[in-house]
Length: 94
Image (tube, rainbow, N blue to C red; front, side):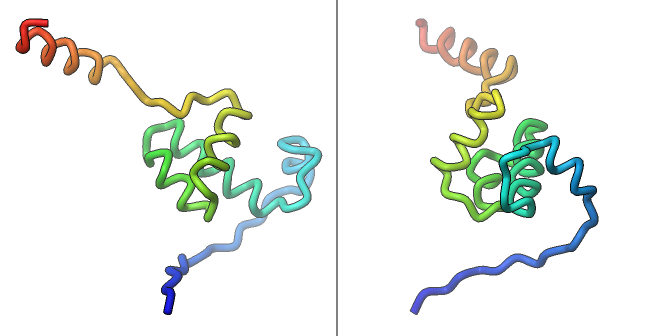
């Protein structure tokens, strides 16, 4: 027996023209909007890459392709992490 967790959903009204501009080749606008929203949450560092993929019921590899297609790096490595790594290396004498 497998258990599939379902998420609560909310319906919103989005102008069709807006969706056509965002991706004129899309046939499933609902999926497109969810992926774009998840992408923006990831870009704003509100969710991880894995969580963003999970929220849009997309395989991680597929979502990574979507992220790359929108010129967003799947790697989040900011100045804080760089400084932490620098301190760790210094404490190790490296």
